[in-house]
Length: 109
Length: 114
Image (cartoon, rainbow over all chains, first blue to last red; front, side, top):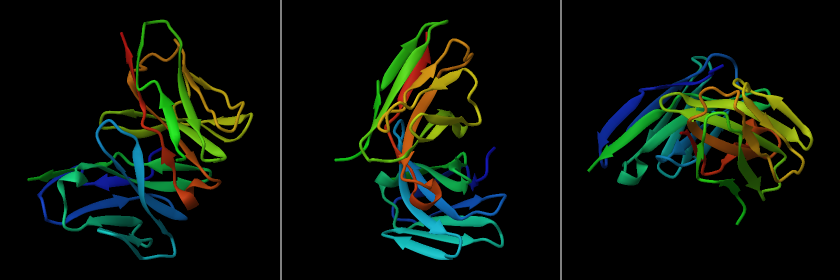
């Protein structure tokens, strides 16, 4: 019962460039979250945006939410090698969170 | 520091065996979750529990069992009925509504059938 779907599936950019990932979802939500997963590790919560918010910032991260289009984007500015990871969007569904399949981001030196 | 501890990090299971994955949290979170992750598949929910002595099936509960006897602990048993158990298993917890606060994840257990 997948709710969110990330795009692109994979992304390679040069270090220092900005990386943008998108998430589309199907039903109405209360909140949308983004997580990062380094290879072979657990997920780390990055940022949460509520349905009544349009944009949120956290350090080099910028998240936007368009509830009319049922979509969100995650922008990572001035990318670093340490940003190489998979990024997942997650949407709330009753008493649990549903994750997408993720975007694999690779930062090239 | 508070967090979630999963053990073991790697686990090998023979055909027909049951194995139990441990998940312990000291965050005083009410809710706990088990996810399975296969390559390219994202995370799929196995079981979750919002209070002690109560739990609900997720999307792929067949072949798995759980218990929640203590708030801090939510072990997952992979039974012999699970035909394809090789995967990366992730435990998570949250304070009350996960949509409001997000999840804290453990570092995972990689299970391999030999």
